[in-house]
Length: 502
Picture (cartoon, one colour):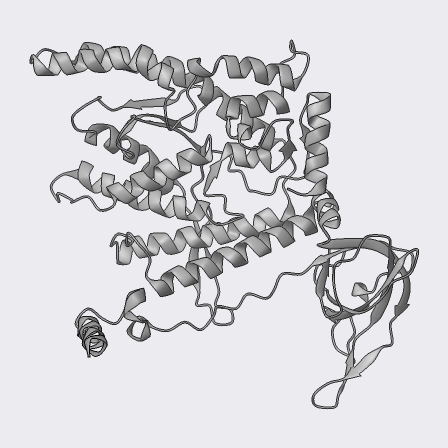
């Protein structure tokens, strides 16, 4: 937690109301997202209890699984809703021409977006997807095929949720926490009701703190999922589960306890359903950052490629990644995190202010511009490398050679050449390394004027996929060699033991 974030939390705790930490919304929000509120039974991690799902705030679809027996009907109904939402995103497409090493692609103009209340629901959907996508499929049973397809898409969406900047599967508490700071702990911010109470308290309450305290008192009477409250289990669910078990054991009709269970869960899940749409309205009201459009384009590309994979191959994703696949996934996640942080800093002055407190950015006034500075390139030709001097009062934690970016000149790149410390301001000499054109065709638009105040942030490293070995060249301890390769590890151990005995 940065110094600025800590200060905002302290001020929010003092005033009793949440404070904004961002001027812009940094994730794309669909006009018709699919809301999903899921509950699971206490016990088996992936056994669902109920789901409230839909894209209409006034007409949610409630799906309830029986306390015992098959959950296939409930999962099939959930699969129909989720797959219908995904199919709706495949109605229109656009043509992307070939570029560099990228082949041409027919990309969908939309991508699915599912909003859930908290990160715990994301984990529950991941576990559920791992279970469903490996289920056997009966070619004559459409429900079993749709359930396995649901498992495939839940795995895809939960994997996308691990990527910073992705908007395919969004936990609303983390989304809200990205834009507001409350006076409670980050762990308490995972409760959607108390978080919204801090951010947008009802009119009849004195402050967000008072509204959050009232929301905490009503915790047993609402369900945010995926786990249920122990008091709710003991006082309400357990009697209905027992009544259903007795009816099933005695061969009697089980529709009555199931109907009572459905009415109970509808009443308890409805408040959280309304809170999810309340959170969506607050986030939708924020102006969208420019970088979110580019990230949503990447989301549509990833969705299109997943649809192509499902149509051409269709095999379930492995339960565990092999070593090379895990290394690639880690590299992609690291690059996504760096790119997301850089784009947030370029878009949002609040983010730049926070980075200045951590030393990852500095702001200052341009005092001099050397527009005629050139260097000799490797071939001896002159290269135009204009320089500028910036005077700053920020504490610098950077060294010469550090690459920088500036929010005012996004196509330009900068490098620190020299830092001169003094008792007052610090002078930083910068060289423009990208975006300035050529010596015979210079781009003067990247040159700031003397007296301009600019903020420079650390530029992310260029994305380069590391050279990784093929599976045939991977050690057996990390998933290789191929399965038909003889394993002599036991012989080596026996030889070692014999040598020790001698």
